[in-house]
Image 1 (cartoon, rainbow, N blue to C red):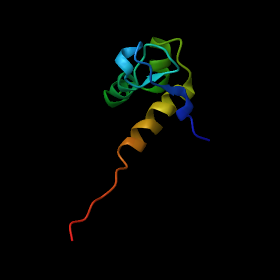
Image 2: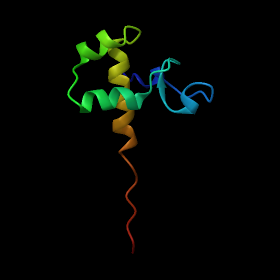
Image 3: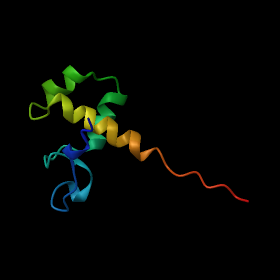
Image 4: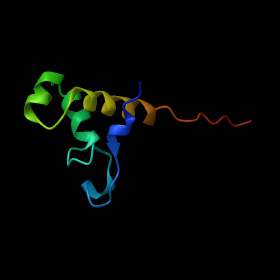
Length: 74
């Protein structure tokens, strides 16, 4: 099941950047932590308002952003 419903966009929160459940935790922040080597347990310990499904949602959001249409020139 998709967890994308956890990703929210609100101009009043993080200037409208994608965040988790209306919290002031951006998807980008979670992705950067993962990229720097933090594991899920470390992230959840540092951000007690996060749930494991929030991290899954951030990864799913990033994966969908990279799947863009390929245009071919004829």
